[in-house]
Image (cartoon, rainbow, N blue to C red):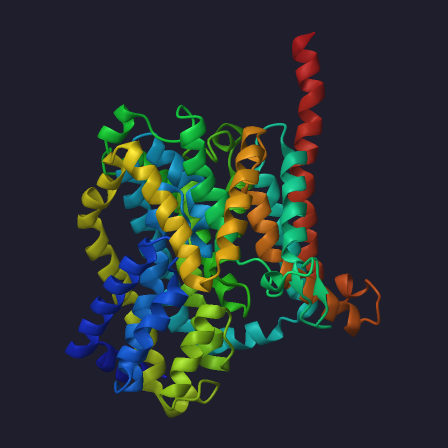
Length: 504
């Protein structure tokens, strides 16, 4: 193992590979900043460039593009509430309110520090325990994944304002319903397509996210200027990039917890950065004090640091099943798997024995990439944040343009534009009625995976629900989900008698 690490270090530190890391990070960050172009688009664009490279150099460049795109995706989420990457949806919950308060600089700086910390801690874990963690990811079965999805859905409570828990649950159910539209992967039967060929593949996540966040926010700024964006005073002040000692102390435990949670979630094939970011946000919201909970969704530093740390840690963790088992954990890592095979490299348990320089150089380059991203992005923050200084008459049409073209460039289908406008209008009406959008996105993301794993689990147990308690891992995760749901309810029940006594 030590010889392999040494070979990987020598490969990663070669001057041409250092240049590839810088190019990959820069290209990924730039593409990730554009709403609608996420890591999948970025890597697909860069794969032809890597033909002719040796496998280690090619993977180093593509890995840099991957976490650069995730890193850059937080910028559009924070500045214009346009999370073009699924993994940065949770970043917008508190990042965008911070920007609206005139603290865009602090929000972008915190996102940069949190991303660097999460990626670095995860890279260390990966370096120390990649082969062992491959066995852990193999031990997870369909019942365990279903339990993990249930645990993810418990984060709905974190997105509900005071007295709005029922509305949050309703929106999560709506998201689950929307995820069933399209062709059933198991039976091949079309569901809820209403005879429309355009709905056979279901609703694209990017379409829903851009409609309910970016487009709805732009429409809100038109119909209700007082609610739809920052005031002119806030826009003229980007705010300081510096975090005070108190703020660093406040977010340090969040970064540590979210790094661990994000990494281990990323290790599981199929989980990925999106689920990791939602789990981290829900965990921080549930661990926060009663006073801190009121700040979530309104510009909480913990609410920004948690998901931003977790999604970068999960990106690093997703390389465990990819490199050690040859199992892609997401669409992005599936493209990376295709790139590896096209280089003549067969990922799997033998990779780090037969080609250690490829295995270890990619892992070591991740730390170098996180360092490059921090150095690249921190000096650029004052210039990036000036996007908010644009007059609303210019910024709103730009948001509309990028949202619509971003979705159109994926499918080249005008029906998607029509659907997007329909969802945006519906989201605007729901927002005016104080329905939160985040639970719907969470339900939509988890719905498909939840259904597939539930069906497989029921087939394994002959239609019985005994799979929920037969495996210790499944039972443990379900128990945690029950505790997460019950604790807030018990606390609220206890507070009622105290409030009545205080009133008396």
